[in-house]
Image (cartoon, rainbow, N blue to C red):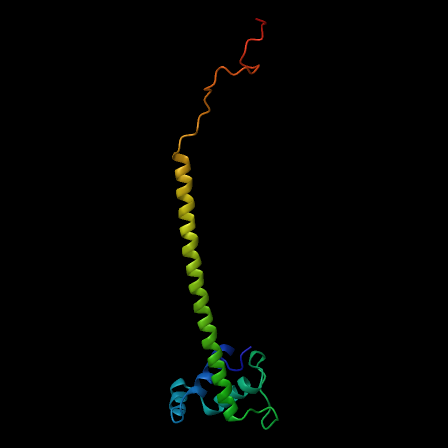
Length: 144
């Protein structure tokens, strides 16, 4: 559930974090370019920093759960740092997956070559070189 029509919870969260990371003096023009009023932005901030954005809960005005602006900026920076760490971890894992896929491909080729080499070799035929063997299957059973 979103607290504002036309915006998802993720979009609102991203918007508020991006707004708080802007340098002083650029926030008003950026907000105007986005088409969001000061009232709407304050409502979103309250929900992101002190409420429950996913359920659309907005804290009451003047309640004890309001977060001071300095702490809001710190929360925004912490969120951005976490996102950057997560993106770096995803990039590292994707590189590892590519590495393992290349190793898997190389092993597949090696196994294919071994199968091809094995199929090309003639089967070793069993030959009877020692005909003087006195086994009962090859000898005459009549008494001499």
